[in-house]
Image 1: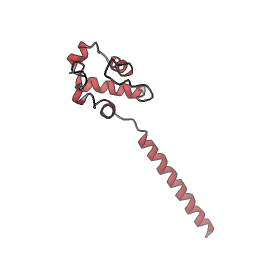
Image 2: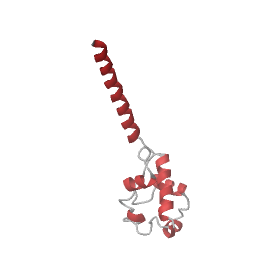
Image 3: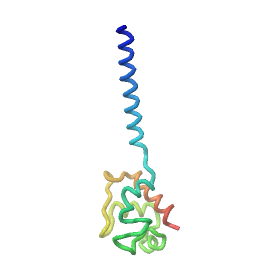
Image 4: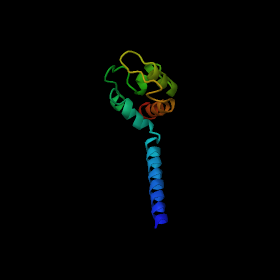
Length: 111
């Protein structure tokens, strides 16, 4: 009887550990550029606009006018923005996340 009880306890512990690891993996799953944009950028840039400075939208004509020609330029602006924009350091938005956001911006708004 003790063997069956111990086996049950080990099963429950193992199952619980597997579930916990799986949940952590889900939480750590990479967010898309669109999800990250919505989380960090859309408050000031709804639909690619700009509620702070209407001359600095994410639309192609304004990107070009503001010398933003590549995803790297978007990332540079995120890291060291001009007046009115929050700086997003690597602790807040990783390089990979910044790349995902920048690629999303160009895919979605740079038409």
